Length: 403
Image (cartoon, rainbow, N blue to C red; front, side, top):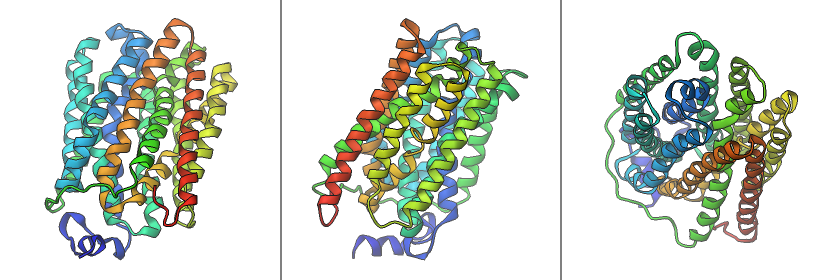
């Protein structure tokens, strides 16, 4: 019996078979868990001004905090990707949401210094790793092929939506009732996601899946591309509010800038997902082009000044951060049955890059300026675009298109 037949016969948590139409529940569940698992990271970044004032740390320490979250995610990515493959996406999503709820509530209740903040962020990072692999596997198994690109666009839009929520939390929560209340609200959302997902049937266990032979080199290139691209994108979401405030933008306005820029990334991911479902050619070339164009945004941020900061944030988010949905859609399409394992491999690079990006940019900002950090981000995006372009060229030269 082939993989497609096995998928079609699954019921319960696997929901609707891939050939019976898109599963709204799968898309909503994967996106919701992705968002609530990212909130600890994005709230830490967006509320940096308030956290720094109360907990007493600078830009470099903020980079360490973000790197702690992402380092834990990177370390757990491959084993938790295999775990998601074995226990099924539904159970993985529920556990990820529950752990994120505990972490955000723990930060609100106990964080009094950088030392007490870091352990919660590390645990929250493992929740993100499990949630990402489980969500990608859920979409690959439950969504019809001609809708899979849009489904991944929706799922990956959860990241800028979480960033948008964190940005709005600055003027409407942190500056009114305090930053801890924002983390309490995030915990409530995570609990809600876990409860809604728990209403579904239990998940059947499955055997681990190994990626198809001959794709190791392509996955390595994609790991490098994801690592470099997410290094720049995570540094952007981590420091854009603090950098804008440092450049003279009011704190409330900087939070709103993050929210609006996040909407640009949401729009880009949804449009690219819809387009991907209507094109038969490979999409890594489009990803490479977006990465290359995203460097313009970082250059504008490096030049500085309020108008260029606004324009740079919109370009860097819309183009330099809007590619991830199409990126992971293309990775999942390489091996739909093993999407959880393949995502775990590529996510390792993404998380490691996301770890290094804030550390490097935070260090450069503290030693020299944010402009130096944005130039480093532009260089990382160039490397990501080059590695992705190599994968695209390898695909177009081979029939069937294997990496």
